[in-house]
Image 1 (cartoon, rainbow, N blue to C red):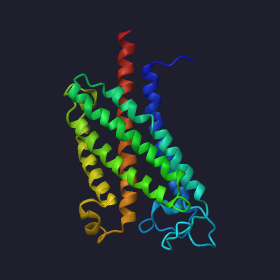
Image 2 (image 1 turned 90 degrees about the vertical axis):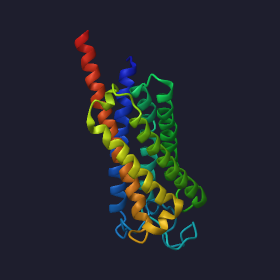
Image 3 (image 1 turned 135 degrees about the horizontal axis):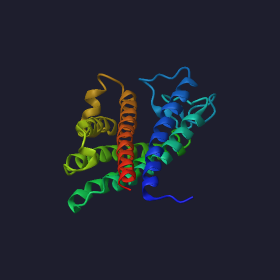
Image 4 (image 1 turned 60 degrees about the vertical axis):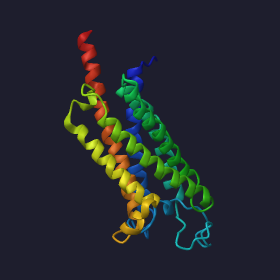
Length: 242
């Protein structure tokens, strides 16, 4: 079976939607399987801590609990990162900016997006129990990668040419606004500029962690759906012209 570039683009976009479905379903099941888990007060990482529940958490931090079924969360996060990975190179191929100065930001989106996908999988591979220091490194890398991806994507959309298919609908205005929100919440999670000290007075940091995760996944799900519609429209036009 032979695939052309248009097929590859479509499969990359479908892969992103699969990543979002895996994330939403998998994390929900992991939380349901952990009856004492608090959505607002407990970190996502606590769903994936491996170890003997009768013993102290391997990471040595008593505030973290060992999950009864950590594989649910860890496998979910690993698969989410894997399925999300092909999406970002496809973004560049679909936008296909002609001018060199307009190519720079999409290239950053691809780079930071791939970094986000890899760090996300690493969070699942290195749980906060047996690999605590590696887990912290992965989560920090994930926060910074998300911040960079949101920043680059918001700016890339702003600087797209007016004749870009992505700008044919006024829905593109959503992208810079949501990107700004993602940057802001990401900065809180990363502990930059003292914002975490201010905003944890309102909600625990674990709440902002989940807010960032769901915002990022749903936002780029929205982007993937928009791209699918653009691709379907393009393919229909090509068929009509032929």
